[in-house]
Image (tube, rainbow, N blue to C red; front, side):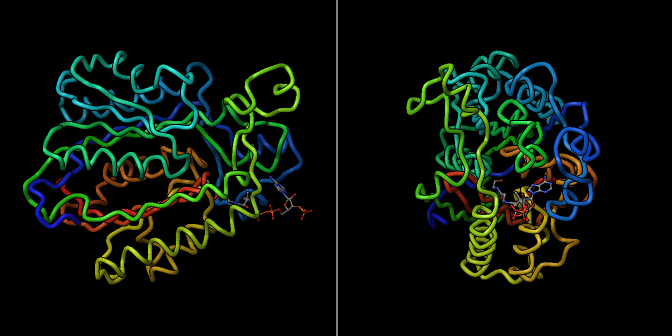
Length: 334
Ligand code: UT7
C-alpha cells in the first residue's frame, strides 16, 4: 500500500450478464466420451451458459448496462472502460471501444486487457490505480468472455470446462483509506505459455486454411500440467497476501476465487484455513467464464444479501500465461 496516498478505490456499482441458453453435462454425454459424474467430480461444473448470437462486446455491453441501471449512473459520467478478455470481437478495435459506443459513454476512453483467467484481477488493479491517482472518478472494469467462440466441441478435455458471460465493477475514489483495495500481489511467468494457449490467428501463426485445418483457433490446454501449477500458484499467493497484511483466516469474510475447478478452489481455501461457507462459488452454474468468474461471484453474493460494508475479501486467480495473483479489499457498499 502507498502510505501517502490521498484516495482509495472502492467498488460502488455492479453488473452482470449471462446468456439464457444452458448446456448441461448430459448434453456433453451426447457429443463426446464423457459423463455427468466425471464432470461433476473432477471439476464441480453442472451447467454453463452459451451465447448463440452475438460476440463478447454484447455480453460486456449487457453487464455494463445492468451496472449503470442498478448504480443509477449515466453513461456520460464514465471516465474509463477496461475490458478484460481473451475473446475480443476482433483484434482491433478494442472491445472497450465497442462497449463505449453501445452504452453511449461519450466521455470515456478505454482499452482491453489480456491476462486470461487473471484478466479481471489485473484489470481491477489497473482500474483502481487510475482512480487512486486522483485523475479519474468513475472507472468501469468489465470481465467478459465468449469462450464458446474458441472452444472445440470435439475435444472432451476442454469443451466441458468453459462457458460465456460477463460481469462488471464500477470503481470510484474515497478518502476513507480503510475501505476499498488495500493490496495486490500479481505475477506473470511466460515460461508456462505452451501449457494453455490458442496457437493460431496471431502474428506467429496468422489465420490461413492451414491453421484452420490444424484446429489452431481453439483453446489448447495441458490440463494436468496447469492443474498442478494452478493449485500451488493460487494457494500460495492467497496465503502470502494474508500474511503480508497480517490477516488471520477468521478476519476474512470471503475468498473469491477464479472458477476453473472446484478442486483448485478447495485447495486454496484449505491453505488459507478458510471454511467452505466463506468461499464464493458459482462454477456449478456457469463453468469457467475466464474473465467473468470473479466479478460474477461478487455480484451474485452481493445481490443475495451476503456481503456487507466492512467485509474483508481476498480475490484470487490463476490462468494462461501463466498469470496469477491475489487482491485484498474491504467492501464499501451497504
Ligand atoms: O482457468 C485457467 C486455468 N485452467 C485451469 O485451472 C484448469 C486446470 N486443470 C483442470 O482443472 C483439470 O486438469 C481438468 C479438469 C482439465 C482435467 O481433470 P484431471 O483430473 O486433471 O484429469 P486428467 O487430465 O488427468 O485426465 C484423467 C483422465 C484421462 O484419461 P486416461 O488418460 O487416464 O485414460 C483423460 O483422458 O480423464 C480423461 N478425461 C475425461 N474423461 C471423461 C479428460 N477429459 C474427460 C472428460 N470426460 N471430459
